[in-house]
Length: 137
Image (cartoon, rainbow, N blue to C red; front, side, top):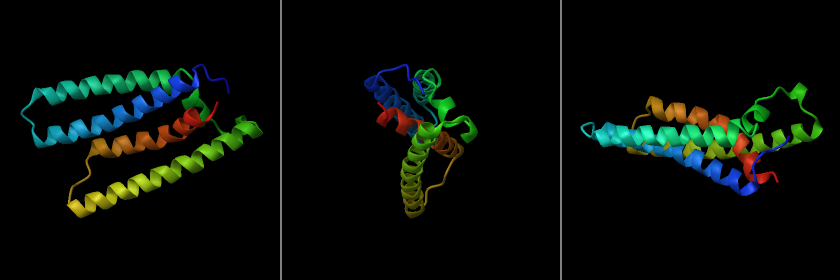
């Protein structure tokens, strides 16, 4: 797989994408608390644009998204090994983070909203490619 970006720019892109995804959830939660401020809507739109741009540049244009969503029949041995390793790390990280999140929501009696669920689904899809982008030279 030919990656078009340098290692450092990929890491910055992954970090920016993940932080903007987290920021979207946080801003939405604050908006739920204080619905009267248009500032939250403006910030949410800006963060969403940052997410879209960083996601497109980091995952779509480099081919990482396509690579991690390819059928196994189309991968060679090295690519299968790389994908397997990234999936193992990604879903281990995802499991720990989601269980911690669910535990904290249960302890604080907070509810789960659709933005959080959608973000977690997207996070699960991005994480294997993020592991590859972060670790592969």
